[in-house]
Image (cartoon, rainbow, N blue to C red):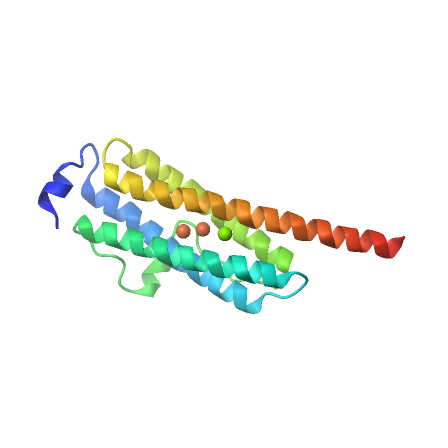
Length: 172
Ligand code: FE
Ligand code: FE
Ligand code: MG
């Protein structure tokens, strides 16, 4: 553990920061798997565009897991060691895809990103002016999660519009 590095944390217990980060760490692994499996099972119109986006997001979530794990270790903590712990620590939970069509998959993913945004925003509030390194890391991740939500929402809206146009032209 980096003694001087950790001595600059003030106004919050290091163990509390570690606890918050381990919860986020669980979320990142579950988000990674959700994107991984969604990209496999997804069906329907324009699915290739969605698969590219889902795979890119999976890569980002795994990178976030790395960033969070490295910070936990710097703080002298241990990242969750057993996947079972992901379910007892997660903020956002895990819901397996139940419908595989593009629109349903994108809607599930948007919900996940909205939860991630709320989680990182509240961690940022808790460490602000107390642990600037963690604040910096969670701010970077938060910016990615905001981008993720926007990417998924715009793709969702494009596909929904496209489907509507097709239906209208069939009814003409
Ligand atoms: Fe993430
Ligand atoms: Fe994300
Ligand atoms: Mg993206």
